[in-house]
Image (cartoon, rainbow, N blue to C red):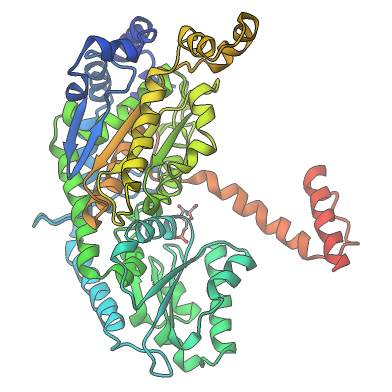
Length: 557
Ligand code: F6P
């Protein structure tokens, strides 16, 4: 196959320059760099849209980012950024634009899809969302017994769940006291039972969230919720009051029984994992109100403007994206940890998992060529300081290499004594420990001071060495407000875009999830058949063995 832009990545002079740079700098210790320079924090610190990025605890010199930026230009990142915002069909395999940025476009500029400016429809949908939420929050739209709604159940999975769930959790301090929000995602009776427990049909409104309106989990849950509604006092005629939908497939929503006037549109030029900014954000707007939701959009818009206009050396998404490439493609990092030191941001890692891994978890480029380099990392993490008592041991002393993003609001919503100082001190000291480590000599000195014998020290000291030189970013901001949360989520969306462009993959399709869904249909049928029905010729030995075990358990019930 002829050399294309994508297959040229590793043989390009830009990539080769980085390879040589890696040979030159990979043994440098950050600890020494900080000792040699008192201005390193200032040199490697950028701000935008209310966020600050301290990237000084990275395995870089002043030459590293310029070399990475040259690679970005070689991979036509500026052109790709413009193409995305302009609505070009950058999701080539599905012949679609990726225009989640249009949903938070506060400028007067039109955005064209197939020659049509989509902004009027985007804005009219936002107005409909505002009216819907206003009527419910002000008790004008009530349930079938004329009681105001107290609970909203959002039924959806993947991007129709993770984004709204994260934002809801992150903005809990902004929730109305009158509306409680529940998220139902999994095809698991326990999830359904837990969500419906304690709810009353007369005061519950359901939002069926599904871009395709074809996702098995969502449709099954929606059907069960509708039956629960009808079994507990609701009537068919009441359904329009209590069931709404957000989808790109209005016909299927109507077929399900959602009144057309209760369907909020989504568009195929918005990917599921990028859809928080669409009507998928409805449950969030219901709980935090229109103005706070608008602030969320505004924060994302400010990050968009920054991403579009800031020079790469001052561009937060570009810097974070390129640093990730540096570790994945030159240090062979396999994963990346997201460590928010904020209880309200505990859902961030899960959202970024889908955002990053469903976008760049690919091994073939846009030309259909197998990659000869690593692409999307495994994203994991969790809230700090809890993680320090769970997986930070590996981060500090493991054989694995996992760059980390620490995320810290400088102010808390809930000041309690000096808790926030303690939380922040944990955050800062963890990244400090990852950077500076503990040398063998330091370990020996500590043990000698404790009075251990030389024999004991010779065995224990090496086990107490902390290698250090493990990189991390610290993203910090004043307070987790709607605007900041919008900017933070958009930051990661654009970081993922930067990396996808460098690797030449399509960050906006997700063909990999199709096989499992397809195979599931046949397995599901087998699980439902009688235990004596021989299926051994239909599946591999493992799958048929597991099906038999499942069916035999059913027989015991
Ligand atoms: O995981 C596959 C996927 O299509 C995601 O991309 C999407 O967010 C999720 O399933 C839900 O899809 P839908 O919104 O169409 O129900």
